[in-house]
Image (cartoon, rainbow, N blue to C red; front, side, top):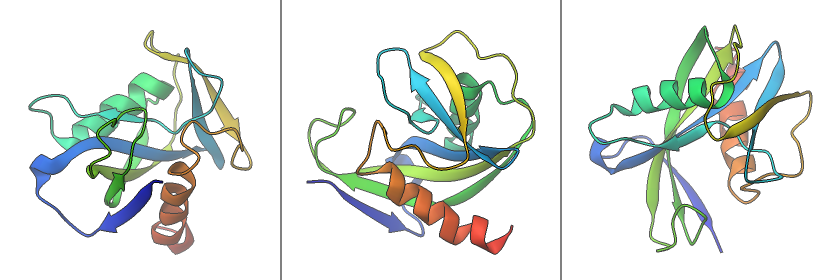
Length: 147
């Protein structure tokens, strides 16, 4: 069983991930990893010495080819329970962002096979117990407030 929690703030050193819920021309932006048949939002691990905002920008570019975009911090989140990226099951922390992507360039040669744009959220998600909760938070905190 997984549990997702939200926080206003935590110690910056605890942030291990950045996840970016994104839209381009009003459509949801999803990635398809080369090794999976599911869809996921851009995001990934923070590198040593990297600011979490820089993690978000780097992952957004690497996984979508995003050129110009507005990036908005939403909140800190945590996941407790075993996942593909956390086999200890202990609470792990990440920063959730929203990106309004203005330009999508050619996809860089990394782990993402293709970027998809959807009118509605896809059902075949890589992290089905986590991603819908994060997307709902972005909708509540950012999209419904018409930043």
